[in-house]
Amino acid sequence: MLRTIGLMSGTSLDGVDAAYLETDGETIGRIGPRLTLPYDPALRRALRGLLDRADTLAGDDPELLDAVKRLTDRHGEAVEALRLDADLIGFHGQTILHRPPVAGRNFTPFTWQVGDAVSLAKRTGMTVAHDFRSADVAAGGQGAPLVPVFHRALAAPLPKPLAILNLGGVGNVTWLGPDGEMLAFDTGPANGPLDDWARQHTGKDYDAAGKLALAGQADGAVLGRLMAHRYLTAPPPKSLDRLDFDRALKEAGAAELSAADGAATLCAFCAVCVAAAARLFPEPPLQWLVAGGGRRNPAIMKALAGALEEPVRPVEVAGWDGDALEAQAFGLLAARVARKMPITFPGTTGAPRALTGGRIVGSLL
Image (tube, rainbow, N blue to C red; front, side, top):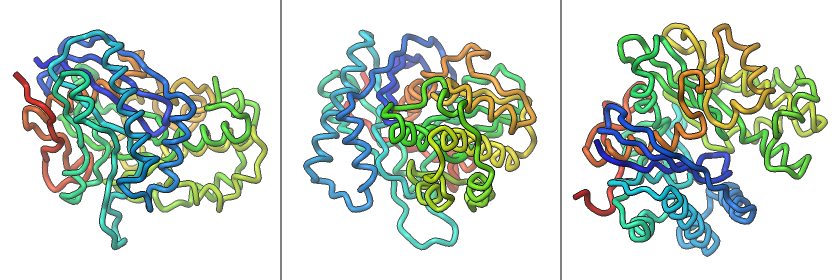
């Protein structure tokens, strides 16, 4: 067993999660403490600004370099705040651009996660695994999702088929079959557009307790136009950038809605995307376990319960910590990188075969 600290900064741009995990890369031993360090508003604004211009952003842009330093420092603070020794850190960094291959479109696939792994290794004195996505994209895969192999390990004792849904800025789902099969892909927008909407209309970073959405009604016309998006019926493998649906939301007329009705419509659309994903499974799951910040939004959970035929529950019913899963996953992925085990698979990213990936800074003793 390796002692790992997994770090994750997701598409919600709200902060860094850190979690301790002991693992051999295949099975899970001790699950230790976890914590979240929020980003200060200035860093959140800086990262959001990088997303908006990532297509034209140069690697030596002063604002980018400043944000990377501050982002990396915050990750270092998270490691230090755990006050635990570890053999290995799994450092995902922050995705600022994700352009995976798309059937019928001719462009060079690209994925970009920022963060200074060398600086983090020097600061913590620990070995750091990073750059988890690039090798998969270079081989023709989507580069996402990465967490299914962790879900498989964590859910080993649970009845299958099982669907594990993570609702961050973007939603992603892992379907686990009874014989070890894995199918995974991004479902569609989740908290990202809703957070942007809440910020625009209330000045708050998110719709706390779903109050804004619960006060409104989903607009059927806008929802109908959104449901026609080709992503929802496209077969996996498939993955999304944080801003991929921004244009569709504008063209659907979401901006014309009231604050409450817009929030309700975005919650309903999140659920519609998940229901569309369910139609792509080999067979229906026995239940849905929901992780990520979206599970704390009663409006989203209510919409999911109405859109799905199977029971929908937060992952805590299985004894898991829904705020820690992605960070824990990067602890397990770090161990797999260090031991040259595959981290992406045909059923998860569309990789041509089970692929190793990631890079190591430092050396394990």
